[in-house]
Image 1 (tube, rainbow over the protein chains, first blue to last red):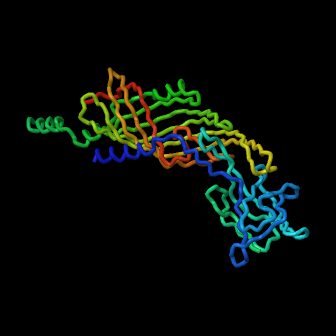
Image 2 (image 1 turned 180 degrees about the vertical axis):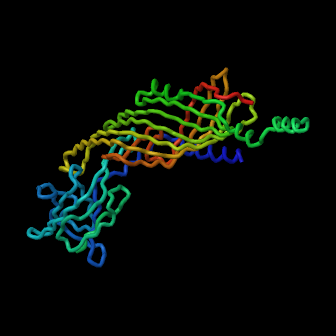
Length: 148
Length: 222
């Protein structure tokens, strides 16, 4: 009995011998957005401009060629971020996303990072949207679906 | 009269088994001590300050064990600073497997319930290359305080207590800590380190105390 207890104890003890967390940074402020038809099929859309809120700042990476996927950054100093998507000089869509943030120390060797959670669509004039995953992590491939 | 007298004298000589059992479970000594590893770590590792006192009281082969301690961390992160400080206690039972040892040396297995009250603070800065203009990095500075926190966990323990001289004892306790739960207080960031336990995100953690004790006898051993 004693031998069995000793064996189990030292097995568990040896499994917990590493006192530092792995330096695995999963934090990102990029919200993964996929574009779809109302039936859920990926849809190629060409945007003339993808703008940050009401500013003139924009994302050239996603402009002027057809795409069915975007990764747009959320503002780390706020709990909501607005994007504008122009499909022509007169037509634009607006998307305001809400979220919460929290700080987390990963390990002393890799530091602290900001994590994003509770993603919601606060306001939009897209036909329909659906939050797939409310937590922003590097391992998550889709946070939000937009339906045209 | 002689017959009656002999009956009474026989009654006096008899030992009641219930009394023997009761006396076996009465404590014989209180052992008080401290953890050497905490003291050495406090003087050698700049990011750690702490101490721990330990005590146990025997009830035949069972020992009521109580630990009380303090620990504070001050980590310089690659992008900021993290600090915590707090008190903790553990209470539990050890089971001695060396019952026949003439010096009452002890090899034991046991368990503890651990509880910590603590606070934490964090400040850090990091560069975000995607928000802001694509040319300029966006510097983010964050600070946070977690106050009035409490945590509890369970431990499995094993170790030795060896009599060195008179009332002076030495020993070690290896502990496997698990199932930490943090609650209460005001939390502005995810807890990183729990005084008395270790990294909050680890579901199991190990610890080792090397202890010096003085034993105060409370009853003569028959």
